[in-house]
Length: 121
Image (tube, rainbow, N blue to C red; front, side, top):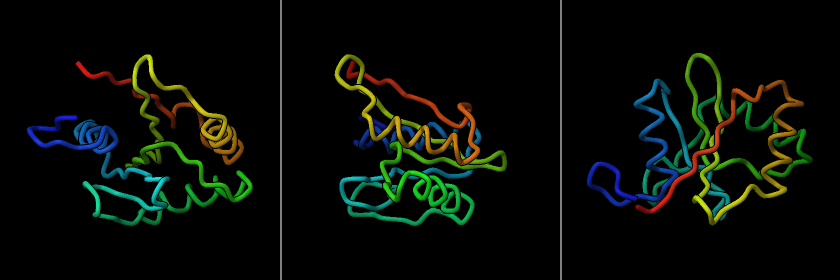
């Protein structure tokens, strides 16, 4: 994707948009490499305490599985999870549904989740 003239993964472009819309920070949950990113690889980062606590609580309820959604964002109102899906090519997986269900059991609301459908155009 093009993000202000720079090629980035969709998840990183979403981080940029979230910050423009009131989030203090956001990270890409790179499940393939098992790390968090806020810039193109090989850059890695850590979750701040507020978001880390929510992430860990959900993972614990989810039987230790960390099948988190693509992006975790945070601000004073709480934590939001965003899943990026390519229009017409991508679907929610059972692991992502289980993460959502575990998050709801952990006390989050549906308002803490969003699906971002994108396309090449």
